[in-house]
Image (cartoon, rainbow, N blue to C red; front, side):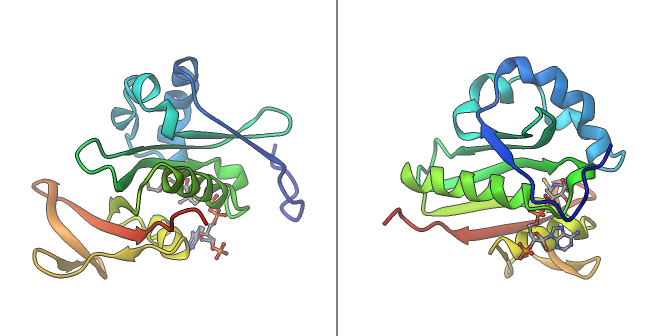
Length: 173
Ligand SMILES: CC(C)(COP(=O)(O)OP(=O)(O)OC[C@H]1O[C@@H](n2cnc3c(N)ncnc32)[C@H](O)[C@@H]1OP(=O)(O)O)[C@@H](O)C(=O)NCCC(=O)NCCS
């Protein structure tokens, strides 16, 4: 059942655990509107990346969202968000923002100075969300206009175009 949309959500953010994996893979395709996304969420993300990832829950323990992210082992100044999603019944209620802010603040404290994420060129919701969260779309060599947005054609695989987002991460004051 949806919560009334005008009521501010009381969210609890915590680190995920491996035991959360079945619960997340069970909903991930549905939360992406029926796309086959569970392939992108193998158990390893809940085994080795929990220290930089987040789960958001409502006060009564409902899953409100999750964010899987990490700091690059190759470049410790770069943080990367692999997946983010909020519960479709709680969209546009600042769940995604709360998780991104927690992630960015946390990785900033650990030395990250830039954050990166990618999305499918047709995911207008994700594009709007990332722009609202202060990300910029990477332009320049290798990009093309795809579905009305600047994207890298064949980024993942022939036909798998991606929009690449970056933003600065401010060091803690
Ligand atoms: C993208 C997603 C995580 C946004 O989560 P959310 O909890 O609804 O987002 P929030 O309510 O925290 O919104 C944060 C900002 O994004 C903007 N935003 C959210 N949904 C948007 C949409 N559909 N279109 C444009 N902007 C949007 C909001 O306006 C808000 O900006 P503001 O704070 O300046 O008003 C959610 O829609 C989702 O889970 N989508 C399916 C999964 C997905 O595509 N993930 C991203 C790719 S990995």
